[in-house]
Length: 153
Image (cartoon, rainbow, N blue to C red):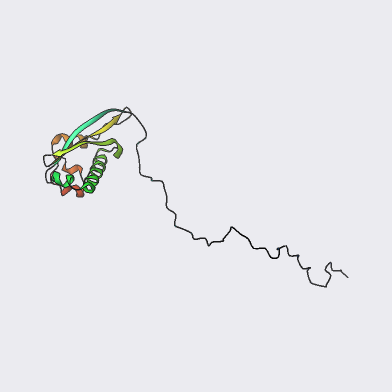
């Protein structure tokens, strides 16, 4: 018959205990792990690659129903207007927002003097954009948010 290697038939040997007696750990307090939602830190919005501009297309657009005092007395509104203006022009011209610059904003309703940077490898601005600027009615370049400022010329 087979013989068992255990001292008592069918029972495994007791494992020795290595925990020291009378020991209390110091300097460590266990804490519960609380998972948090992942928040990406990278924006995937397109940005222009670093390049050196070779020229610029300058133009001025006047918003007939916008009063300069709205920009002068509300810095938050002015910042939002500038951001929205650059986004709208970039979208209409097919360029990066970072290529649209505002040179100045001055009274006359509100006239925005701005330009689009051009690079050696830039394609020609879309003809629809250029002809709209040259035609004198730039209202169609802007989305619904800008329609409240009246005709853009």
